[in-house]
Image (cartoon, rainbow, N blue to C red; front, side, top):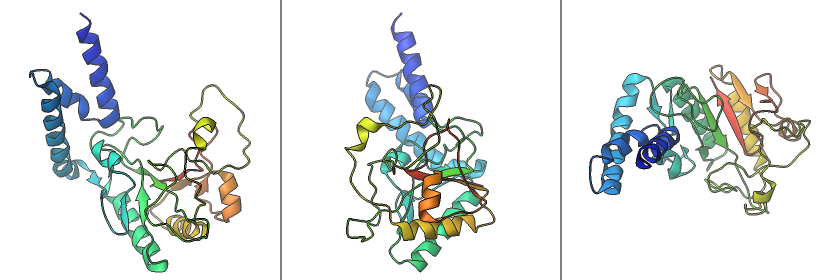
Length: 247
C-alpha cells in the first residue's frame, strides 16, 4: 500500500524535474534491477529526445562549445537545454558577435526548456514553458579585472546575487528568494561589466528579442538602459544573478 503513493510521488518528481525521468521510472518498475534499468531507460529517452525534438519544434543547445554552451552538464542531463530554432539562432549569433568583439568571450546558458510540449512547466520558473525563453549567466572577472571565460560564482550559475537597492517589500507569496544564508559560500568574483554591456547591447539590438529581464540596480550601474530591458516584478525570481531573454 505504501509503495504505490511513493512511486507515484517519485514519478511526479522526476517528470517535473526532467520531463522524461518519470517515464523511465515507470519502465524500471517492471524489472528487478530497477536503478540500472532506470539509468539505461533514461539515457535512451534523452538520446531519442535529442533526435526527435527538432521534428516537434525544439532544438538542443550545445552542451559543449567554444563560444556558446550550457553552463553545467546538469542542464543537459535534465533535458533543460531545449529552445525553438529561432532562439537558438539568436544565441548563436549573440555568442559569435560577442566573441568577435571581445575575443575569448564564452556565452553560458542556464535553464532553457524541456524538449516537448508547450505549456509544460519548467519549475521553478514562471514562464519557461514554450522554448521561447532562456536564462544566461553573467560574465565574471577576477579581482584584477581579468576575464574568466566559462566561469561563474555559483556552481549552477544561479543564486549568487549582486547586491543592490530594491523597492520590493518582503512578501510571503513570492519567488524572490534572497538566500542570504547561502551567499558567503559563493566565489567572490565581480561581473565583467564591459562584456555584460556588450551582451546586453547585442541582445537588445536584435529585432527577434522581445524582452530582457534584469534587476533595475544593475541597469543603472551598468548603463544598459533600453526599452526591451525591463524589471520582472517583485513576485518573480531575482535577476541580479542572471539575465532572462525571450522572443
